[in-house]
Image (cartoon, rainbow, N blue to C red; front, side, top):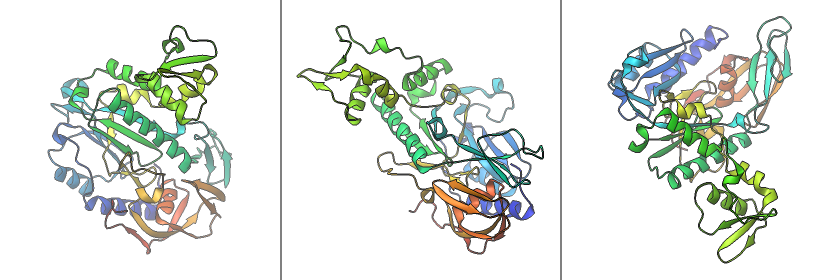
Length: 379
């Protein structure tokens, strides 16, 4: 992360430390067995292989020594979490994790390339600006895309409960544009990397063969399902009703038009990153930590109460900031359109202003109206 100038740097450092001074973090189970890692603001470096016996020790470190742009703990439990050699850490098990990112959905991976010095904005990614410097990449994130990612997280949550029998499952907004699903059941802890990959393949239908779901006796026009299906077949039946597909109903079975099967498979397929799931030493963001790609919180989700995405719900900031844009552009931040004019100060709501500050495309002018919410989880 390349910071613009001292005023921006000092502001970011102060607000991060003010936020963590309130001690908002969720404490992971057995923190003394976890490797702790962070991306340091001061030297723009990842610091790994840290270990703390308590949350107070961790707070002392991030408030007095290194300011975290991103703060992680290992999904794994170790005998010696501070060892800098993986083979000496003494692996004892790992939480089962899934990552769902909005940019995996069609139309949700649009990016702008911003050339600050040239005052030019390009659609899509370019390698170099006209002055041969690297551009800033600005993702065009919309609420609709994040809601699509949540829907996959919702479906995954219920697959893990109903088809695998897991009970201790938590879902988090990643603080940027996706969701993390974590399984803490003891039965999941000692799963091997290969076993985790099998689970990932099952929920994502990776390598799925259509003939697995076509029972003998099916016609070319219809695929037949009983009233008591399980697994993928049950998901397909539920998806058919959800999408309003015209099925034929009989006493003991239903018939689904064969020409709708590709649509149905796409509906039940969960778009996860399989590498995250199969990695038994993966780092995971602390619940209620700050994701400084956006300035929003890594926030625990009530899976049944979630309605639609709003950046305000996941922001610990209040008030507003006057900033001076470094570019002429019309940008979209979480479905909010922001019109910037180079050199012309503009007042923005705190979460939106901070997003642009962290992306290095505005300078801070006045922060007198900015503050940290007294209660980060009160909405």
